[in-house]
Length: 582
Image 1: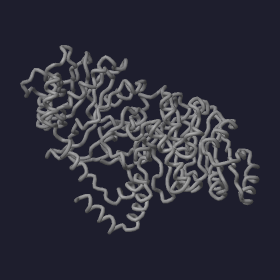
Image 2: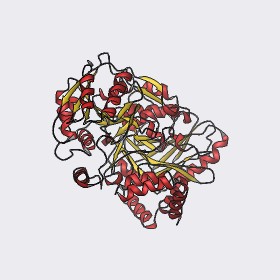
Image 3: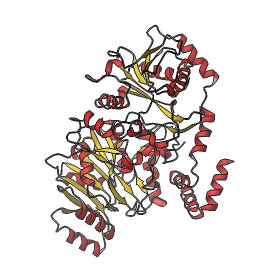
Image 4: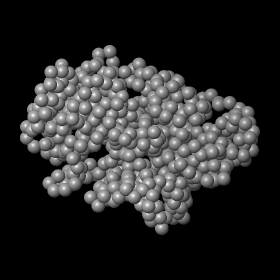
């Protein structure tokens, strides 16, 4: 009834937008329809309350299974040693809540080390120790973690972490939410799997995480201080492959807050961490001479240098007529791009209008522009593969002719990421003409295929834990603006000219790069407009629709997008929406 009420309210208050959503629904574009309605019926608190009603408590059957599994465990138990700093006498009641949470754990193999002059003995449990200061040589064996006074754990939290620890990962972390002194829980944070690029941008790992003591970086002492904790994660994570990190996608940690802070919780500065200092100390050498800058919403970010010798980038722009769009795109690149070493390859696919030919003849006189002819039917993949073979640059950019540059540093920002050896494709933040987000990374599984995270989000809104505005690994980026090193492009076979002639070829390319061991990156500090699909139109009826459905089926068959959860999404979030909600 509540959902029906919200939909009726949306139709009454926003009839035109509701009709647009209904239009997309009738055309079979369910993901697009859900996006349109989502901004009209937004009710995050209600959704999480409903989710908690179903998921907050363990079933008696599951509890019995865990108890039996623990009782039959091997003699070589994994021990979790947890450190907590008590900075004042006022925190003792909160410590008591945390201790009670630990004592209620179904997995009993834990130790708690309370640090601070105010951490006097008050609990009769042999697993709890007290120290005025962090004792030296504490690393030892097992897994080390942190909790703050007042933090609570789900009763099966340590058991789930112990299961994850059986594979001996270097790092284990879980999903979380926020809890106040009344026990009210809000702001669930359903995290992606291991994403070091995102960790550089924010402390997305959060409160409950465990580090294998044997894997502590050389020269890094384990400390209870927030600054040291974040720096340890950055140092440890620098060289960690995905297989060495275990993300447990369950809300097992309830972070105590005196007032709810929502998405702000990921800000390192909220915990008193000097983010810039942490980046400078922990990424020197790994990121070359990267600069530490202030990004959107006050976040600290890295700006990676391209290097002294700027590689040549070949920007490929296919077009068939659409003179005005192509002219605006090319002119914006020529007028605004600060990066100097690039060429533009305009690929003319059977343009018929005399005005288009005059434009191409005139623009080809510019030293940075070449016009290539590619006759025949429109095959986006074949056109770009042809141009990539003709490209003089060691890097290629796939650029739609319905884009326009906004930020002059767009190409140097993308290239700063693309020159990294472990990086595949790099994509920009793309905006609709009204300033809303069109592309902020592509996530497979959305709508059973692939969707654009945060599509339709207002540019000044933070989105889901600011992820629309933070550099991060993603499974794919759109070819409306994509940079990749040319040899990596051809290493994975380029774009598929046979199966994905028009749609999903960029998703397929990125997934091939990811399967080859490269990271694809969404980099929001390069911003362009994208007037989506104005060139080739919509895939709504007739032969176009048949072709689209065939390519969609091929994507599902090849990559399992209708069954697999994107590693950078989360199984708890709604797969039929693009706005990261339950």
